[in-house]
Length: 294
Image 1 (cartoon, rainbow, N blue to C red):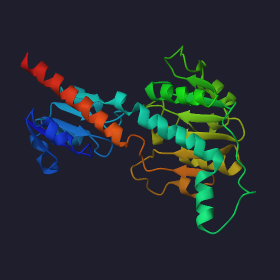
Image 2: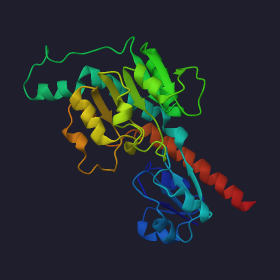
Image 3: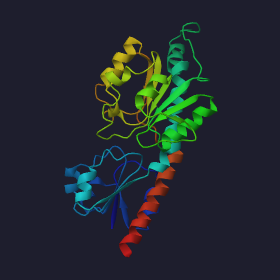
Image 4: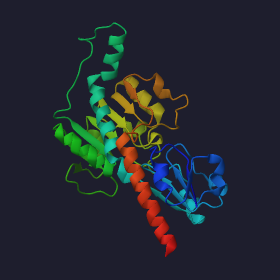
């Protein structure tokens, strides 16, 4: 059995997986692989699957499966899993780092100092204490973020289509209610048909004037042009994103918008998380092998 590691994983993973068969990162051997490991870079399209005749199992190292044609994989009898539970801490910490950085003007202060400027009076900070954080998407990561926000004594609201109770946030029945009440908004939604472009001109109108927004979920959940308009009008005081319409982004209008912080899709890229992803991948392949042997 050949295991193809198509994207970047922890350097120790290939050796750990040799107990199951041959392991390679040579993409020219894709057609030979029974198991293929991907992250966000590899797009497992219909064409990709058709060019992988021996493929039986795809594991996505990370959260979400939007880079995999799940329907076609199912039609071909290919099992698909991800390692969603591994990335919770890493993504929640980045989201909260961005929430802290925006009202404290961290990137602007650093840049101005390097340019020889002293903007002590110009950079007006605001505190998180007592403010309301709205979480759109109350899964593992949203819950982990809510726990961190409570430590800063923030009021936490959340919306999720099928979450009705939480020990860490007040659940609101609609996204609109969360957006209307929140000083900060953090997006943690998967990319599915109902969430594509869900943050748009109409939904942004629900926001408080001067709210901050952070997206560490999926880039296409927001309409970038509408975010730019909201930033330029002051509807949003700031926007930070780790996720993009494409990796890397191509000519994003966000680059011309004020009051922004950008990161290159590093939410899951902690040393600790890469190790956790490897542990989960090992467990999943072990279970797959045991099922085959029955």
